[in-house]
Image (cartoon, rainbow, N blue to C red; front, side, top):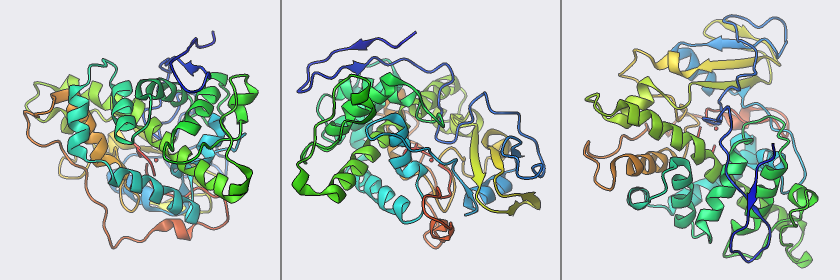
Length: 375
């Protein structure tokens, strides 16, 4: 059954898809869909990508996340303004210099946001859906108009964001609706794309004199803002839900959830060339499943892995935790300041530059919220 659409007051008549939670929520950029084959521990059989290699020890998971030969599963391209195009344009699935440029844009956006203000805004919200509230808080902080409508559109995109080949007209329409609204201080961006083809109206066009390169750069900035919002949606809601189950345990609920009931239980990687993890050969083309929940079980002295590991930690981890804490505890956290994720090692090398070939996704965990908020 198709998702209903609702119209909102807007400068555009394009409809905004009503949010519908996916039956298999994307709990993080590396979440493994249930349809994936059961992974096996040990060397993959040949280069068969359908027989994943599974790692469930902490040192092996962190080694895999740092291995430049193991990258996020590549995102297939699609028409500008659709969900497939979004996946192929965000930092989360990027590589090398492209990834660095895209991630720098996300980091610049995040640098303008005060985690304490995000937390207070989340605490003051009344939206019962934690994912919608998280997106609304970020949209407001970024200065976006119609934050409620933005949150609903992001919810529609989120249900296919981690689907390798998304085919969802409502999600395409939501991306097309969001695209021109992500850069309010610039001229409109967007060139129609999948949303327009679906009959939901083209995104506004930039004047031709700005040049194709300028249009593409603006579209990338807008896409990565959408990615920032999308990657905070299900992951934040799931973290809050899991933390609520830990209330009364005697530990900080968010920290307890991250360690014992993580919102991201598995991560996936793709081998772009032969490599080895913990003495286990991983041939080129193999799929790798990293069992985060099992890896960190019984390792309380080590950082939880929800936000990845060096050298590619999620840049939005502090902001995500602040919003989750605001939703859970209110402006005054009874447990003190919200738990913070570990900072990356400044001396760790960036493996992105070691991945050969254009268009090959870069390594790293993801959010990770954002591979967890944005990678």
